Image 1: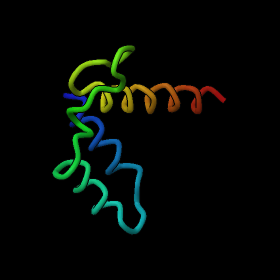
Image 2: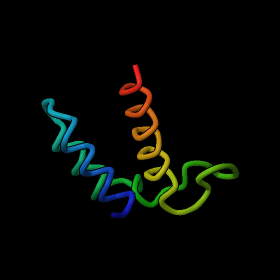
Image 3: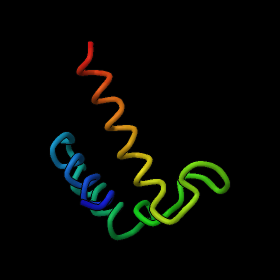
Image 4: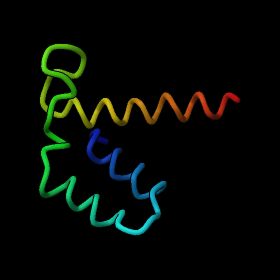
Length: 68
């Protein structure tokens, strides 16, 4: 599964508020969220790095939350 596919799956499973569908549509079709780097010079400094970083943050926070 790609980082984009994983992000969308996580988003759809966890975000259930007014406007959520519109935001996801914006991220998918009107922004560079899925192709942008996370940084210009550091970690994630490649196409898709921002989305991959976001998925990694979710994974880490989910693990931390489940350990408490």
